[in-house]
Image (cartoon, rainbow, N blue to C red):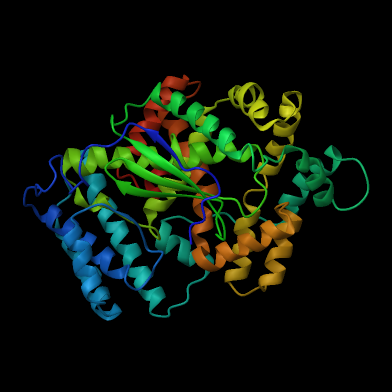
Length: 438
């Protein structure tokens, strides 16, 4: 249940168009072609599989009758598996196109269909290891790191907080001075969104009627979520179950909004669904390679929007005062957070061991407390995320690293911020796969 805790905020210009139907003009069908035929059948297959998995269809804004058709009959998994196999064969039979974007489209449909088939097998009871699952669904495998890797970082953090007792307890005491109060949360988040949007619009042309709405909710396994609704609109939800620290304002505003998920989905709709009539992008299956691109660009987008010292300067002059926090401590806070961020892959290790059956729920939470520096409540929330989304966790950290390396390689050594933005926007507007980033 969505439980708004403060006034809902709408950003952007009010939309005047109807829900997109997959082309520039609502209701107009794309021209007939083998690829377009496969694309339509792929969308209907994803919608049908969504009847077996409530989390599967993350967004859909294509013809409403296709959704109604999927909801009218829960097709058996065996039937859906046969459809996925037939569609994969149909894509393979299409000759390799000459144009790069057409080649990327063909590869995208091939790999997305492979992930659909894998998800069907999982729903039918097949058990995959953590790495097998991530490769099958997300086209990538995260590196395996030993405890010693994280312990080196923890030893550095230990020196930041002199005193006795576990380093986590001393870190939590330090962090308690940077909590955004319930009274200032909305003002801080609005200021963060405004800053992220202004920086994005300096480099990216967005549809005039793009906008999103913010809600504050509770009782979720995640900290934030973007529900894209088509027609360049998003609903962004922020979970307030646990304390919200000052760094989460920019993280969530960029990740869920600008230049993250909201911008990514709006550009796909504008350039691919409406501009090219590629209806396959009107549906977003969550457990698919598309998610690594989505999460990776959303996390790397924070660095694109606030390169180098720009973030600390923005926090010091805008967000710390809005939250009633001491701006003089901004540099100290982000120095510590920079070390903590190096523990990002610890979550993957906990999930890998837990989902492979090597450790139980309690041990997974304890591992997160020890090596990911998560409080008891936050670690418990993260294990609930593992239960619900499984190997999806790799999309945040591995996705960010793959996207960063790709953008920096494309932009060139010592590239300007403008050049980095140009390559970032190009990636957001394309059907490139995770394996295509390497």
